[in-house]
Amino acid sequence: MSIIRQGSLFSIQDLYDLEPTQRFEAIFSTIDIEPILFSLSKKTNHGAPTKLNYAAMIYALVARIVERIPTVKDLRKRLKDDVLFRLECGFLFSDALPSEASFSRLVQKLSQTALLEDMQNQILLQAIQEGFVEDEAVAIDATHFESRDQAKTQEKKAKPEPKKRGRRSKAEKEAYEKQKQEEKAESSVFEKLIADQLDVPLETLRSQMLIEPAWGVKKNSEGKNVFWYGFKGHLAVGTKSQYILQSIMSSGSLNDGKAAIPLLKGLQKLPLSVRYGIMDAGYDSVPIYQQIYRMEAYSIIAYNKRNEGETIGFDSHFAPTCVREYSYRYDSYDPKYKTLKFVRPKECKDCPLAQDSLCQKIYKIRIETDVRRYTAPARGTKKWEELYDQRTAVERVIAYLKEFFQLNNVRYRTGKKAKFHFDLVTLVYNASKLAADRIGKELKNTQTQAA
Image (tube, helix red, strand yellow):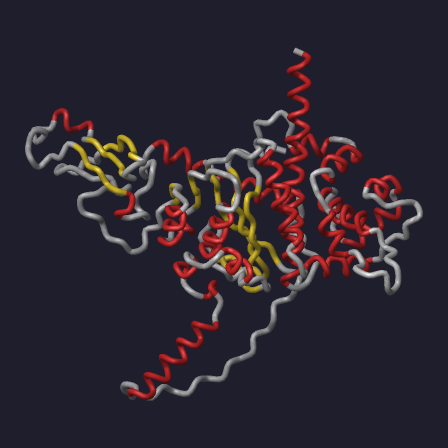
């Protein structure tokens, strides 16, 4: 599949070309389901015995994603008709085939926990430990997918009473301000400004994430608005390894930028040295730059000009300009003082003002002067453009999730079950990546020994 351009010896496509038995064994071996089995097991000896093979049911749900089986009904039919597939999932001949209701109850139980997120972290830590994830650059982007729930019909709101003309009295003004303060205190952090997230712990941000389906809107390539009812998936992807390093599901109405800080804070929990955060113009917000700066990393974010006039003395990339409006050239970056160094333009060689006091030889600008405009490498340089081009890694992973891992195929209602589907899809993707990398490493070692 050309959608993921990997330079590894063994790719995900090669994994899918293997025989089903080998493929399932490779993927299942990366997933530790013991925490799930412990949470599902009976804690006492009282009551009816457990007759379901939960381990096989979990592997069957994973196999449904891998084999692109659209529904649980089709999964159950495959388990019933294909004995080999049933054995590969871990069912015994003596096991009764679980009903659709049994699978539904299993999903309901797991959707109430954070076990899939924990399993995702374990797979990622294992990949880092084995040396498959060594990314310095991380690309962040969001994608939308529709809900199975139908949009709720909006009730017609009664016309508000006409406002009283004139200025409010002191008592009315105090009551109004008190009401606004109460509403702000009761609202979640994602209903406030992005800047309010900077000092909020990651656990609080994740717990307050809005996950119920809602209307979302975005502009397509033709500049027209596209509406959908459902969710958004926010991903932070390693540009080199193409592993999903962090993932969050939200309501479709959430602004993309409001999920960036939780993703960045999640990256700080990993044993990785992230140097660059790469995002498109939708993430051009000062608090996001500030969060990346706090991580001692550098922002590679497209600049979104918002009714800003021309900055006198600087070009479109915020490099200083000389008297004749030639741009100074970016020379180097001093990490000790976090300073960008700009030197004279090439045109200064033949300029009659080269020796004049108006022509400054060197400009040094600290990143702290304006974290939105200045980063290392400087905007407009070839290195900055090369780093920004790596943002396509997250776009490829999103396309892969939608086309081959059934991200678009949400078969559950409610936000919690949809989040279970999203977490399962991202988990299976990373598990497949880890399985493919392990096989590729074995093949490389075999070839090296043979040589």
